[in-house]
Image (cartoon, rainbow, N blue to C red; front, side, top):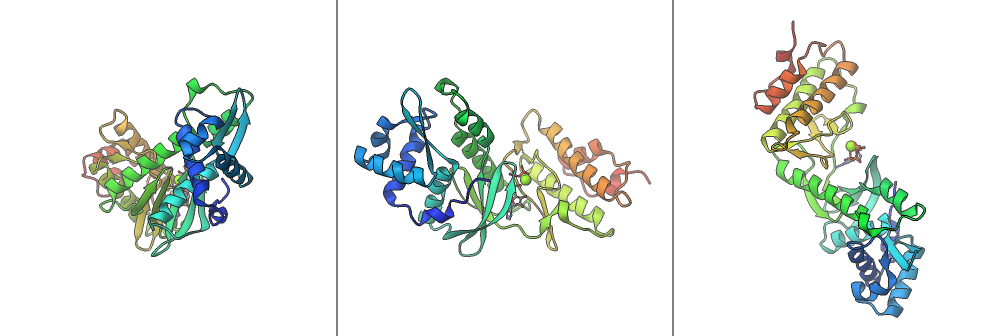
Length: 304
Ligand SMILES: Nc1ncnc2c1ncn2[C@@H]1O[C@H](COP(=O)(O)OP(=O)(O)OP(=O)(O)O)[C@@H](O)[C@H]1O
Ligand SMILES: [Mg+2]
């Protein structure tokens, strides 16, 4: 998990953000931004750049590396700070609270707004970034695909899916988006993986999830990362979240990915509830019904 940057936000001054966004701009062109370019990118004088670099390095928002030149890069915390600043300037959020979850490629926090909301920072590219940027002498900019770009793209894809799907599909309501971060409604209930469904509910819940998958397909998206960890279950129903990998239904692999999503769900239910969910469910037939909007219940796809 990347450190929660909320604690340093109050210390930061407008000029610190000019510096951070100057480095952000420079990172579009090179992995390590030449210090000599920073006055131009940030609009600060060289003296101010020096002072702001010092402050931002002390707070671990920025990292330096001397190669053929003195170069700087944002840390994920520096990028987080820029996104938080944007959200607070447009009054989307007033403060950051406790962690709500840590994913393979994200950090999720509760945030204060007119009501509590969830803020998801995407971290795609992070592992790669650590390997590459801390590694021995990998400095060649011709291979430059910034982690900033990777994480921002993932957030954009997730936000786009949420905006398209909400409210017809039960997904977290999207509220705002900036850089690699999205703000959305907090999930109700708990992850499917942690539920204890009683036997009379099991098939009903599986059917509910598959109907959401079917509606998402009608709206043009396959989730493509469907699992018991990306579905929340509450008394009011099910919510499907974690959409950065969503694929448009006109994509070449869409049907294959849909079938994999359906198969993941059915397999999970079968394993956890062997008495209620039959072994004989015909997964490709379920996926076909989901795709052509005729799906109603898995009961129609098993023998006996
Ligand atoms: N809107 C939300 N409200 C409350 N908690 C959330 C919300 N979105 C995500 N979380 C929590 O954060 C965790 C990580 O979120 P999510 O699954 O979206 O990210 P991820 O990094 O893609 O996960 P994965 O490990 O599945 O790839 C979730 O398991 C969940 O517990
Ligand atoms: Mg997830």
